[in-house]
Length: 453
Length: 91
Image (tube, rainbow over all chains, first blue to last red; front, top):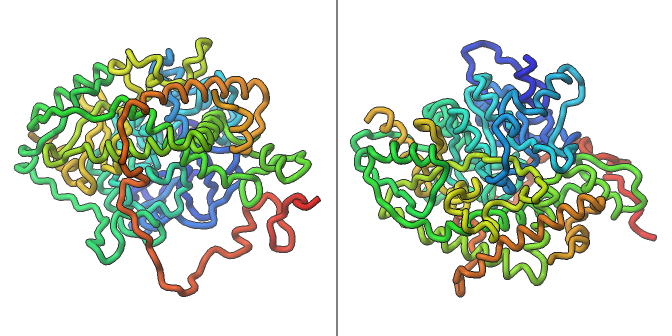
C-alpha cells in the first residue's frame, strides 16, 4: 500500500470488483470533487468543480477511476532535460529509487499530500521522473493511465518500463477539463501495458466534443474523431516505414529500430530541420506555457501567498513562492521569446519553421516514420559546469548533436505536427512510431502485425 | 543578454538573488542555443499556430447550465459577499 500511495496525489479508490477495468488520471485531468494540481503548489488547494470529458466517457464505459497520479509540475520538466546529465536511473528516481518516493514512504499516512516539485531546491534531482501514471500501470494497479505528454517524457519513461504510450492525433480526444499547458500540443494520451489495452482505452475517450475548440473535425464535415481499428495483416506487409537517415538515438534504441523495420518496406529519407527540433519545442512550449500559467495569480483559485502589501505584491509573492524552478524558467523564457524585439526572431520564426517541418513530411512516400524514443537521459540537474538546463541542443554542443540528441528533439515530430504516435519497447530499446494525422489504424496494424509476422 | 529583471516583471515573479543569478544564466544559454534558427530560411512562410486547420466553432445563442457561482468561489483563496476578495487597487 505504501508503494501504491506513492503514485497518487490524493485518495485512492479500490475497484468494487476485481473484474472492473481500472484507470488512473494524471493530475492535470479534472475529476469533479477531487484535487487537480497539475503537480504544482500553486494549485495545491484546487478542487475540480467539473468532470473532464474523458472522465465522463470513462465512467460511461464502466471504467473505475482509481485516483490522480503524480506528475512533474505542468509537465514542464521535459522541456529542459539534459541528455548529458551524469545521473543513473536510480538517481533519476524511477520507481522506488526516487528520493521523493522514499520520503513519501516515510511520510505515508500523513494527511498532507506531497505536491509538485515546488519545494525543491535548485541543484537537487527534479521530480521529473516521479511519474505516477507510468508507475501505476507498470505496477498493474491500473489497466491504463491518461496523461497529457506534450514533451514526450512520459512516453520515454513508459517505454523504459516496458509499457506502451499512445498519443492520438491532435484534436482526437477532448481536452475539456484538462489543465492547459501548451494548447497547440496538448492532447490526452494513454499509457498501458499492451497495444490492445491502449488502443481500446483510446477508442473509449476519443470523439468529438463541442466543449473543446480544437477538435479534429467540426460537426457536419466528416465529423468522425472516433478511432477505427481494423488490423489487416496482409496490408501490414505492404506498409512502408520511413527511416530518417539524419536521426540517431541511443545505441539500444537504434538496434531496436533495425530489428523492427526488417518486416516492413524501408524508405530512407531526411527529416528536415531536425537540428532545430528541440529549440522549436522549447520556444513554442515556453511561450504557450508562460501564457497558460499567467492565470495563476492567487485571486480566483489555488494558492495565495501571505504578507503582501498590495495587489502587485500578491501576484508576485504568490507566483514566486508557488511555482517550481522548471516552470519559472519556462515563464521567463516564454516572456523572453514573446517580448518586443525577440518575437520575430524567435517565436514567429519558430512558428514558420513548424510549418516547414509539417510541409516537409510526405506521407505518400511512407506510411509511418520510426524514431528512437526520446527517453529521459537525465533530470536537468544543475551541475557545476552549468550544463543542467542548457540542453544538448545548445549551439555550443552542436558537434555532439547527432550522436546524442535531446529527448525533446526525438519526441518533437508528432507534437509539432499533431500526428498520432506510439512509443514502446522492442528488443531492449525504445521506439516511437508515428503516422499521418488520423492514421492510428496504420500504427495499430503495424504493431499488431509485427507480433505475428 | 536578456534583462532578467524585466523578464521577471513580465512573468510576475520576484526572484531571490540566488535564483535570479541561476535562471539568468540558463535563460541566456538557452537563448544562445536558439541561434541556429537564423540559418533556416523561412522567408515568406506563414507561421503555423496549430497542427489543425482550425475554424471558429459557434453554438446556438441559448443559455446553458454552467458552474454555479458558489462552486467557483469555493476555490478562491478569499471571498466576500459572493465576490473574489482582493487587496485595494485604488490609492
